[in-house]
Image (cartoon, rainbow, N blue to C red):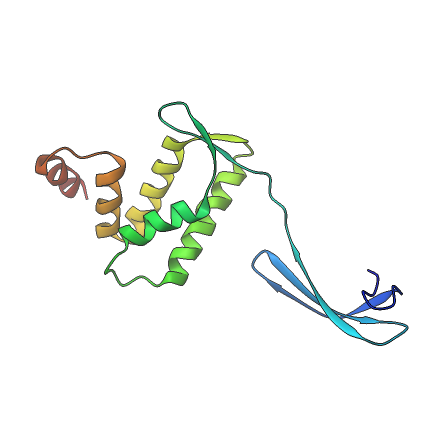
Length: 144
């Protein structure tokens, strides 16, 4: 990498990895000035195929918002929710598909919520499965 000040070569003095970001502290070999660079893996965009056959880009924030609603007033931290979002995204990317049906995502989320928190699972399932009445709630509760 070239120094942003004098355009000479640089060396890495410190490197730290955090999740999918690498932070490098660099020093210029000529002018001795230091600066920091960040590297992040660039992932291919995932396309979600909705129930009505529309296609839209995968949106982590939309998934996170849905999970925050499901975990509302539950003993789960925002960090745990963020980790769950990352885990879900990683599992989707492991499929090596560019387009994924929304049904696959919903089923993956439900499976993970069932392990994590039963109340959040029921909340999410009620919206995802579009429960029409209390009987459907009872049926799901009996299953768990």
